Image (cartoon, rainbow, N blue to C red; front, side):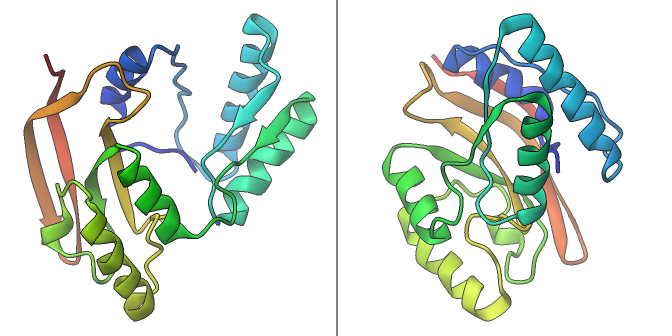
Length: 185
């Protein structure tokens, strides 16, 4: 349910977007992690008065249902603007809008080592569409087929740059350990 690759660098993302960040400590145990999330959202509701939770759910019933349930219990609105949108269209629009997205983990057939560390461009959308037909890969990686990290985008005041990273590939999957990321000048 929770994103964990490159988590320590999300603080930089929040800073250059200009939003506060709250990290939810959890052991990531299925269903128990939802209690941790609910407690955190409840605290944010009480301390800063949030009234809405916006999630990036695209197709995961598990994720959307859980977030909707937490919001209902806490008396909050739940909004999922990408819900059931075409995955290829989402990725294409993100790239065309100026999001610079790097792949930090590959966990599905068809996503070989060449994808690890790749910054997505519009030509990759067609390749991801082919992988959908061939292997069932969701082009927006909604099923955990891959993980990504955003280096830049229209809401960023500055760009992030990966200074040092190490790819680790084991069998048919791998991850890119981001060891040093900085705010670019």
